[in-house]
Image (tube, rainbow, N blue to C red; front, top):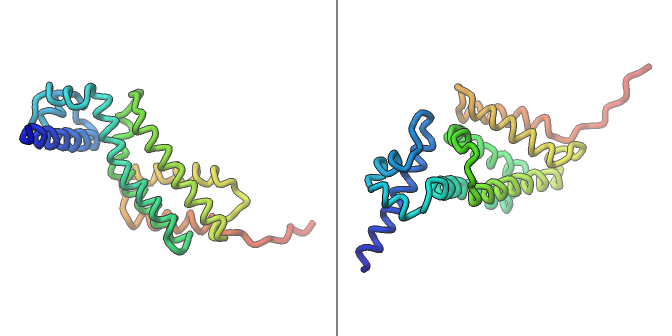
Length: 191
């Protein structure tokens, strides 16, 4: 009995890892057969473990998102709100650079765990932005949710860039963070 349980755990892990690998490959087929071949198990094993391809993809994507969410939660307790936000954003860009193909492959699948993880990621990002605002590190004249959308959309574009790199991410964040710094009151132009 213990042997079967160990095999089941191993197969579960192999199937999840195979699914994550296939999700990251743009042209790879994302079928139960392709997943089972990559994992080295039978298609029936994949179905028995997860029930459906959508449930498997949901589990794989949710698992991929967890470390990034945890990194954001950890950043909330770091000293220096601006550096905590910046460090988290560098990691978010790296994650998106490595996984942007995955998002495009999910299409209209019903993915409740992934949806919950994305919401958790959005919340932690917004919490980091609010913390930076409260700390005076970024401007308060732009709504925090607007700042989050701005950062998300630009981060997505940078991550998909053919020249995506840590240096590009750092440069992008320097420009964004400079633009988000509180602005000094400027005198109105003379009439």
